[in-house]
Amino acid sequence: MDYYDVRETRDPVERECELIARLPTQIAYAKANAPAFASLFADVDPATVTSRDALARLPVTRKSELLEYQKAARPFGGFAAARWGAGVRRVFASPGPLYEPEGARPDYYRLARALFAAGFREGDLVHNAFSYHMTPAGSMMETAAHALGCTVFPAGVGQTEQQLAAIADLRPNAYVGTPSFLRILLDKAGEAGAGTSFTKAFVSGEAFPPSLRDAFAAGGIDAFQAYATADIGLIAYETPARDGLVVDEDLIVEIVRPGTGDLVAEGEVGEVVVTTFNPDYPLIRFGTGDLSAVMPGRSGCGRTNARVRGWMGRADQTTKVKGMFVHPGQIADVLRRHPEVKRARLVVDNPDHVDRMTLHCELGEGVGVGEGASALDAAIATSIRELTKLRGEVILCAPGSLANDGKVIDDVRKYD
Image 1 (cartoon, helix red, strand yellow):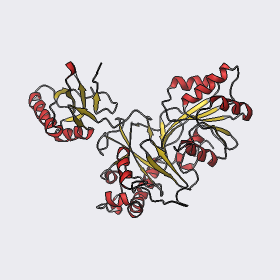
Image 2 (tube, rainbow, N blue to C red; image 1 turned 90 degrees about the vertical axis):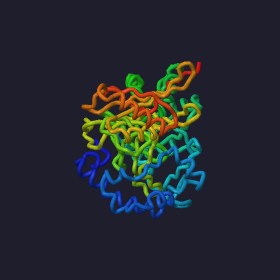
Image 3 (cartoon, one colour; image 1 turned 180 degrees about the vertical axis):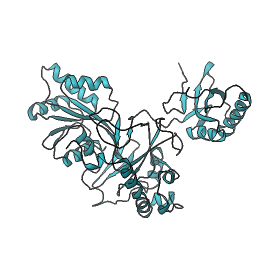
Image 4 (cartoon, rainbow, N blue to C red; image 1 turned 180 degrees about the horizontal axis):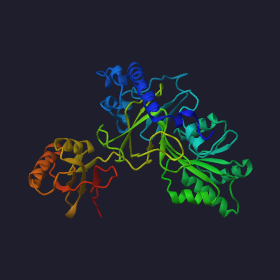
């Protein structure tokens, strides 16, 4: 079979109905077992969350906020339902530090699906070059490989010469790790007049440009990528169609305007917000802080779930102007006051070493930039001053003139 399971090719309507039907139970479970959600959703009746529109009305909890939550309530800020012992097999630390639980269920991070799409099969020997120390990446890949019936060599990071010696002795046919380290291994092996035994690779953790993918292919290695995080696990994965990343079957993914919980139109770049059905760490409307966009249509591989464009940068664009923090959410508040404006970008520069803010406002269809423009300029400038406590200039733009890259605040100041 070319698919991990039959769910990957089911009717999209069936998938949507199944995911939405699971929402009330998951929200009720989170309220009952995770103290943070008991507080955040105190006024939420789980039985009423029966659509994406209802889900979109729940608050977003952003990864950038977790550090403060965890400082106030160690170790997981009240977001985990599992407790020490049988419920939590391992605990990891990501930079911050942020602590994440790993439950005891097989393939806890759900990455086996992505490895299968990359061609990994029972009987493969997998050289795992992700870190096994404190951070979860090594365990994420190992548990997925084990779920497929693969054997794993826990190489970890560094010690290139020793890793090459083990590769020469064991002849693994599969690699998981960052693309940059795979390139280092290949280059070092080439310098020694040797090759490697890899024929397939699964990479993550870094950008994976087509040029590097093609270079690996020229060396006989078919490499695929995925988008995954320590707290969520797999979010989306590449398939042989090479036409974006297919969303995992056990998540609801939304794309929202940075700094808000407001959904953007299909194709528009925004922050990735994920709702999980993980009983151990039931994150609901979790803002990853990553930028991406939903792609139209379905993958050419036959999988019918939605696709995203992959990681496109960070959504947290908070900056400081004249000693005052300016947040994407404040720009969203400006837009709410002025429905004529469909999208906006605040450009911060410093001509003559003096900070300046200019809000570029893309108007909706049928709204002209000529007649009444001065009045709209003045109204928007007033809103900027009231909401940020700073003065800002306004430039009105025609529809479609702003880049679709998810940027709400573009800090272009130079200090040299």
